[in-house]
Length: 238
Image (cartoon, rainbow, N blue to C red; front, top):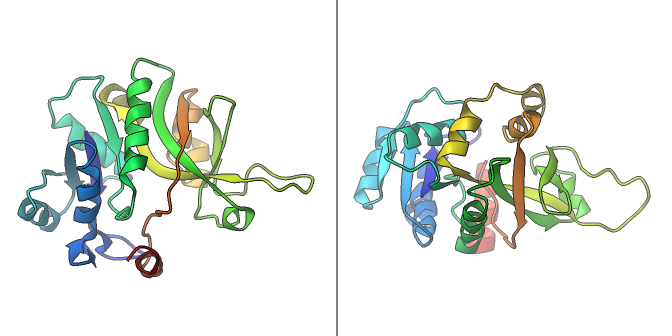
């Protein structure tokens, strides 16, 4: 199951999830791509989003407006559904209207592969970027081990290159694969100090000794955080 958290308010881009792209609201466009992979539910704090989802025959659930993260919103939605503890759940952000279905499929397969591994709490992905892109603190970098298990995530440019080398950095893409059980565990963990410093919720899992499995994907998509992001995306993809 793919759950799309869709908070109506955004400080940098108000009501961005309802912004029309080729006359389709952003959240609906994202959902239509996800529907090519598995069943979809939009989890939102907005009756307006609920009504729009209904008009497109896409399932939705009304959630609290007080959630601090999309993952918490996804968890509330999951608690309202009759799902097995081993059910794969993909958390796909509503502001990914140009995400390729192959990326979602990769996370879905990775989550299924690790469904019985109690040490792996989250499954996610990365793409390779160059040094110039890595300088952007809005692009989260990840360092992984030989098995593509995440060692650390940061807004800083990691790894630090002591000597001049031509390397590719790994940019984390914020799509997460859980099971119902691992999502419950994650959302009941205390906030970690490093999570609040970096403003990266996935660091909570690492802080408490859990592992995050990663997979490399090829994607040109990126999340739409600002109107400038949207204009750039429209130039690239339409």
